[in-house]
Image (tube, rainbow, N blue to C red; front, side, top):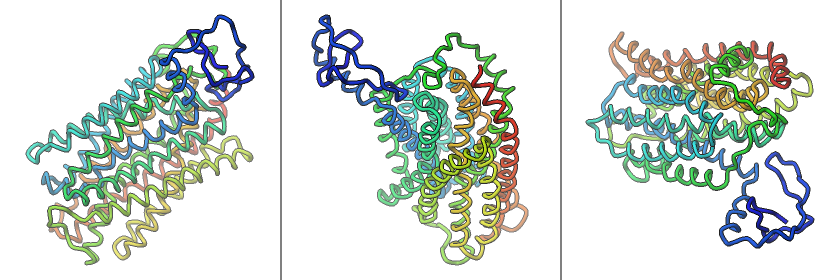
Length: 489
């Protein structure tokens, strides 16, 4: 038998039933009471919703929302050449789109982290999704005379998406623990490469189907509104720290106190710096690699420079598929490797991240060596390099869950997002475009030099990736001490 909060009895539950809590444990059955009364139709509907609010269903819905979050973010990259031609802007001007998006994203992240530690998280998530969906849809109607308005719209989208990325991992952290939490966070963070890849695929496919690149921005908003509704209906609002047996924490520290504690948490600081290196590389790659490969084919004379209204989207489509597949492989391999290595060493999480980063840097370097001669070889290097790079997405989030107490996690996630974007992909797309433009001005403009200048600019990425690997090694030095402090606090 199940009982609603107002004392009505819900049909369909026997007196021998047990009730599963949000943390997955089984509570004793409730016995029948003469004071109970039959539920009204409204109560039965609400009870049906409650039965659907299982931790696994909530994690699935939140992961779906994260897929849409990143899909919307990279839909623009999937039609980048069309946008550049439509608005007639340079490489640095087109790189400004992602930079403005990330700048607004990172500025809003600490604000939503503060709100997420103190107010209803799923309401904030839903409002954020509704907001970016409406703005994205509206931006598809901006005419070519108002490029500045299109850039501004990407900044507004960044604010909406910031609320989701800052808060949603903390709900999963309060629904699961230990290896089950690692697995669910792995599924959640699989959405980053999966959603990014689908963004390229959606953008290029919608453009070709409609014969107009504007339609690439009109599909994800409809899915976003659906996800926001599902979150409101089926995602619970678990008590912070309930699965960590830390529900006894009654007092909430101030934001200033939280920030001081995070600044002293060495594992958190170094893993955040490492995350910045990953963001720098993925931000630059996501924006420029399809365009770089398109220029490579022009140099190899296997394709012609785009002079039509609708440019070829083959490279964006292939890159999107590779990103989806490598994201799946990277997250699965990362979770499995970490679980296996934990049997050998308790420092497995940061060590796996460090090794994967250093290995990724090698193959990223090879992309720019082989692209001039072989597009297939470049795609092979991209495949291996991205797989190794994506290994650490979920593991980095799990490190944070281990070393930060539950009532501080939303702030920690938000501030880590802020720093990783500030030092990473907030500047990398624009910086790469700026370097490329500067190199093109040094010599007579040609198809070969356009290709080489962008490649030279992108060579900055592998050096940043190596630096990230060093930061993960530093995280490994302090990981056990910081985890123990969080458990004792």
